Image (cartoon, rainbow, N blue to C red; front, side, top):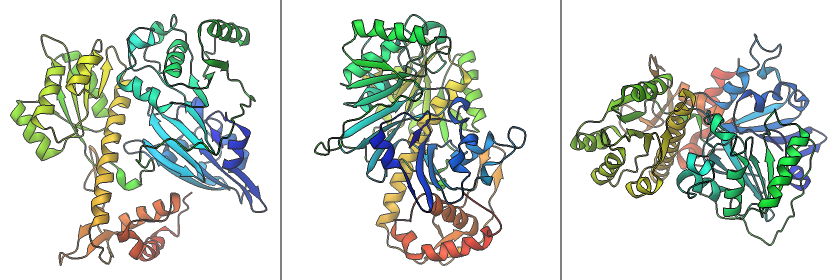
Length: 484
């Protein structure tokens, strides 16, 4: 297995890479698609060897797939060989937060705090747990400097690494260096060790070292840390092997139960975001981030209007400014919770400092602390919209599985692309003219066919009854193209 830089134990690697007479099979987990984490892909020989099979996992965007992101760095202008020219059979898995399995290894994925969608991975097998969290920046700026309690998203990050035998974590800066690097997406080592101690982590491998810190400086830093911390800590380096003791008798910790693989059908056609921002500069910055994602934004009106909007439009996110006495975002959040208690609408508060205790009591989901970059705002928005999408798709899937199955018929329907993102996508299960049979368009069938090749066999009753018919119909339109 490869996790970005390829750090892990021998036993775990053997479980995820295998060879036989037909070729090599393996799995690659990618945290995010910044170039320093994917530049090795065009030079990874096993991807070009015919007979090899690889599964590549990584975070999906609101619209773009993992395959599209990886293929971008191998376009004509940048590289002489395209990604589709690889000889190996490659399957791409678009991930959101949740859990999935690779053989007998349970993998959990959780979003990190970085200026692009980034996933940390927790791998559990034979009683051993490895957590890989790179790149990540503290959610709380007070906590990043050593002050404050571990709460909110930082607490959930600590819970993600709970009891790990080995934690591989971004630790590019020290607390002294961090104030000049806020918003760059990396952690001070003191923050990492505080969360690791809270989460009762056995060993910590510090990684993503600052390029200005040479080997001697890293050794001095680790020696200094060991004098003040009870955590077993060391600096990761290329070629280093960390052995994990397997304990088959120790059961795996319970997972979230949320499936991390999200099919192509999970795209958000037109998410609605409610805005309650009075400050012009802040509003412009947030709107710039929303426009970059082609997201529809609506201003908050009266609380009655908010309640109606939530019931009618099903917004995916609310972004509120907290700048008392001019505007009290925490009170607005509390009012939203009172108006629509049954709707778990994520609320993102924009402020110049966080108030975790008051925010937790009001039901605040997360904070966007000023000053922030457009990239950070986009990523925060993307993160919460994808979390909402995952829940919506899960609910729709459960509802679909509970409905009686009907024969599927394939018909043609146009796929329209609007100027503000993808619009008018054919629904997953439309009704035929007689109002009885679900209908699937040829474009939809093609997407289902591609998804089936990427991920797994369909497991819902509706799909399993006629999946062969869907594949046969879609294959007619796909014979002239290659998809890996």
